[in-house]
Length: 188
Image 1 (cartoon, rainbow, N blue to C red):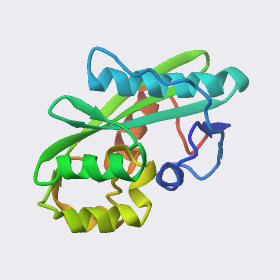
Image 2: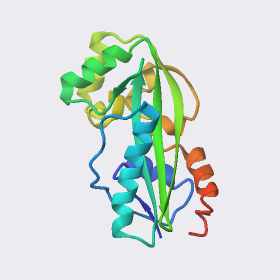
Image 3: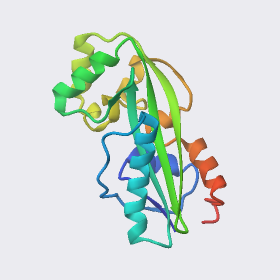
Image 4: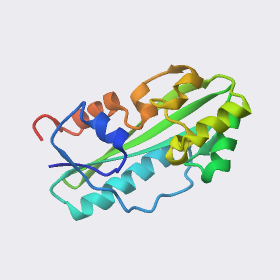
C-alpha cells in the first residue's frame, strides 16, 4: 500500500502521474524551522512527515514532501494572513527565487530522501496586482504566497527546472528516488 502523507490536492494530482492506487493520510508531524541549509530543512520536514505516518502504517510505502520558497537564502513558508502574503509577494516581485521540495519515502523500515530545486523568475508586480491576487485567497495556504498553476501564472516570467516541483511534488525526482529504493509504483 502506498500512502501520501499530505493533504495537498496538488500533490494528490501529481502523484496520480506515477500511480493511481494510493491513500492519503495527513501527517501530524511537527516541522523543524531551522537546519544547516534550506535543502536540508526541506528534506528533514519531508522525513518527519513520512515517518509520522509510517509509524502508524509500518507495512506501507509512505511518501512525504515539503516545499519551501527561498529568496537570497531566506526561507518563505506559508504566509501569516493577507498582510503576510502581500509582503512576501512584494519581495518576490521582479526577482529570481528558488523553490525547493524535500522528498522522503519510508519503506521496509528504511528512509530514502532527496530534493529538487527549481528557479522561478517573477516579473514586476504593482501593489494593486498583489492586493488583487491575494484577495482571491489562493496565496494564503501556499509557500511563498503563490500557486504556479493558479492565478500567479500571469506574474511568472520563466522557470528553470521542474515545473511540478513548484506545484509541490517533483514527479521525475520522486520516480527516481523510488527506483533507487527498489520501489515500482505500478506494482506497489
